[in-house]
Length: 174
View: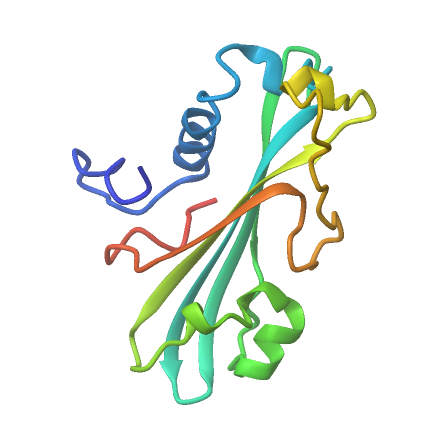
């Protein structure tokens, strides 16, 4: 969806609203209504983190991170936080990794200047009403992940995907 959503537009760059639509569509396989929003009827709520990285030079990187989560609003709303973590100065690999440890991943290695990659982490957070039986786990207890911001798995049922985005899609416009 990330690669195709802007195909019919002149301006191919993704927006926060595009990311919200993608996030909502990605969650429809489990939540076919507003159950993904508070009060979290299944006891879980989806989250997507994305990390866009482009190599500018041998030790110079441009990166953007974003978080989308279904976790607020009386009527249900997708919260989107897109942060530009780039200073006006050159960002070295070690400085980037210290800010975003998730990027220290062999799949995110960029060999040439101008190369870019996108790491997508999709995971579920457990709400206070989490009950394994609501998800159909009557015998097995699902292993819950580390919910810390930069844990190896940031939530429950975590999935990671690395792609090379089409040119012009990133950084996401805020």
